[in-house]
Length: 359
Ligand SMILES: Nc1ncnc2c1ncn2[C@@H]1O[C@H](COP(=O)(O)OP(=O)(O)O)[C@@H](O)[C@H]1O
Ligand SMILES: [Mg+2]
Image: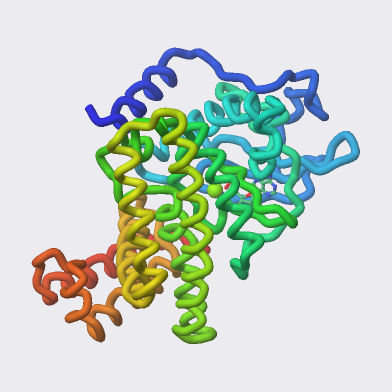
């Protein structure tokens, strides 16, 4: 079994066991638990209702003189795969661990971008956090990138790997906040690249952010302000990611990380340094091709496609038409003929159209 399969197995066993995981105390809730459990969009304590979440119903509620986020698990998660089905359990597990770490003085500041959990119970399907009065990120500037990578750095050092750094899971209220841990899994940062051990070294924190969020932003930048602006935005992000990874490498080496992990980080660091010095455009193309394919794949696997899925498909199709030779030279087409890639894109488009969830 792969590490991911072991984790899935353990979560299914836990789900079948009837045991609960609870974070915080009922007494610490601003409303009685019974009342929270009865919450509907019409409840007088509800200010706003977000029905678009895939795992949960999310409500903004007002109680005890302030605003809170109430997340109620859906009976059936809308993401059609095993990780989707266990994502609420997973989130409660992560919240229990992260809330305990946030209370340790050594980690309080480093984890300030991670939302607090006031109360959570897996069996009650209930999760209560302070409301983040923020906005989705429209422009990724230096401050936002630095804050995000600072949080990611702390999480990686502590052995948390977040696979779903999508725009809907990041809010900015002057500080970049993370609040959705449905696909954040544990791993040993001294011995593994991510929560799949050493099996998928192509997946790492910067890659996850680029795949889920940043290349969607760059796609939009390309269209609004042209490719030079998109290229310089990539440069900014890579410089910040590079510094983050260099620091991470140092810290993990000091803590006795394995040769495999250090060599893997050295490879990524060296690659970025080289590209930043000599050939950023090529790095842009390589990461874009990878990001758009990978995110497309996630959407198709979960059968949850959006208009953005179609935009990514447009980008891939245009890129294949205009730059097939360069893609071949960068070894991105893996010996598969261009016609086969085109056919795959056409098939993906049909599926993406069939699996639109809107929004
Ligand atoms: N603590 C919070 N403060 C403000 N908004 C939140 C908070 N938690 C969730 N939201 C809003 O609800 C949406 C769905 O919440 P999320 O935790 O991402 O659920 P899901 O697992 O369904 O994706 C988010 O995209 C965000 O807009
Ligand atoms: Mg989410």
